[in-house]
Amino acid sequence: MPRALTESGRVELRLRPEDKATLTRAASLKRLDLTGYILGAALPKAEADIAEAERLTLSERDSLRVLALLENPPAAPDRLVRAAKAGHTLP
Image 1 (spheres, rainbow, N blue to C red):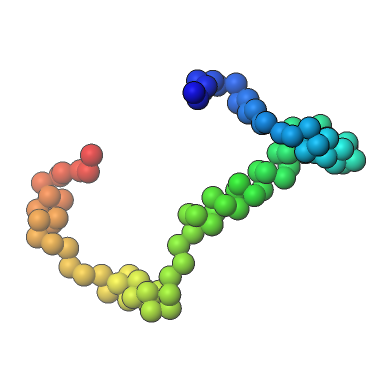
Image 2 (cartoon, helix red, strand yellow):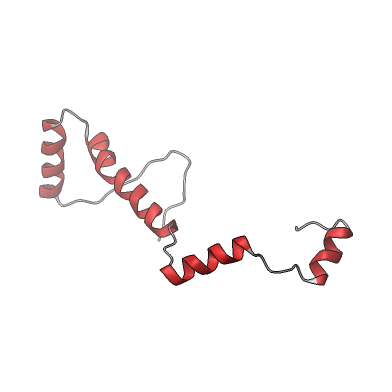
């Protein structure tokens, strides 16, 4: 059963004793506490994973299509023009 979320920011890990010993030793060699050592390794990876997931890569053909549409946008549909003139806004 999942535990209730708290606002403490606390994260718990279940590690094999030998894995914890390895992490603890590496942290002490870098003169960091275990939390600082794990965060120093995990946060850059997390940020890179997020950036990769949010990045959109277009093919050359698609890039040229986007540029062409930016330079020569299609005419707005009549319905959109009427809504803009009437002062409607998106929710």
